[in-house]
Amino acid sequence: MAEVVVRLSVRDLTQEDLEWCSWSGTSLHLAQVAQELERARRGDVDYLAVCPPSGMPVAIGGVDYQANPGAGTLWQLAVHPALQSCGIGTLLIRAAEQRILARGLHRAELSVEEGNPRARALYERLGYVAHGRKPEAWDEEGPDGVIRRHETICTAMRKSLA
Image (cartoon, rainbow, N blue to C red; front, side, top):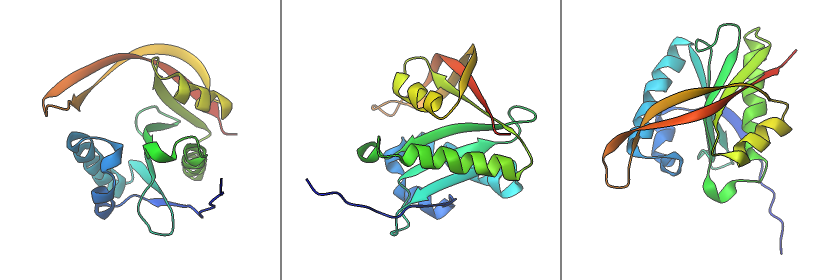
């Protein structure tokens, strides 16, 4: 077994990057990300990309500064499936936390679906603490191309960055 080490950098996601992000979701999801990039231009959110030297994103995720007053809310975090459990999600979250601090905020929040214990374990390992449960819903595109409403229960988590 050989070990391969690749240098990664974190930067703002761009509209041009979206063609390389089909691994992160359906065309509906990518259209939603494109809308969030418009909000990023206005300064309402940061949308980050983790990239190897090729510049093609292998992880993406956003920080919304309007969702919860006084906090940066992490959302739409995704790591290329072939590269999960390699520390890339941790790098993405730490970079998002730095963006939150740079805005003068000292709290990060996120929600995780209750059916996603792997992601919750990551967030807990990084210091996030559950503080409630809430229903959430969003549109998602099925394999048949039909858009359906996905309804779920999420655990709300937060972390002090002070």
